Length: 344
Image 1 (spheres, rainbow, N blue to C red):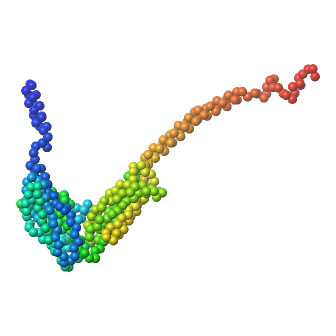
Image 2 (cartoon, rainbow, N blue to C red):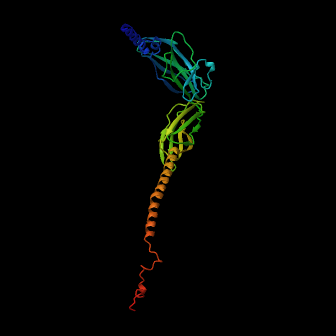
């Protein structure tokens, strides 16, 4: 019997060994640390100019990593600023494409362990290049074969498959800068703070912008309650950025004004928006009102039971001591005090 119990305990201990303690080959292979510097390049060129950009790819692992170099155009379509690589140059928007302008010295390399490989990308701007922004990526992809991916995380946050350096090219000329507040929303009523404000800024220009925007919250009397700055982030052409901001504290009451003010672009064009919101903790107010009503009711009952009762008792006591005017035997008439005197 004891042997059976020991065997059962051993089996249970073996089954409860954490799975995380067992080596996982797939996890070990997916943690190769690759770093690219710089993660982003911003250059300004003129039509017909020839220039170059140098990019370094670092291998921080203990083993060499082999892979491919490649260029690809990218666009940003979501409100988070995530670039989407366009592998086929024919699918890229001509207005923002620049992968045709880039030339790599070689298309494959091995990154030594704890070392780097530097690659110089030559850029030749066509004479007929239109003014505005062009967006291209130079990436290193690990592996023996080059596979296509439709999307990737932002530069500098590559996985074991791909890591990219993004190049923002600005072609000089008459560039259109136009942005607008496509959404500025806050619910019209809050029971409690803070007030949640949703802002979308849409870029309708030819080049990416980095707006500098602040939100302020003022009370009914115009007093400043809170102020916050939106994070400065790039907004690419034909794309928008979404911002969610909280203003104020939990306990607020009354009408509040939410004001947005900012600027963007080289000319410092203005961005403005206004919204109003009411904050009223109606549940707390209802509880307070009910408490006051109950207290008034209790006070009224106490008044009737104590004060009025005492008043009635005093009235009854005073009535018991009043002299009866029909009883003349005990009444002393000061004007006729000698009327019954037989001596007169």
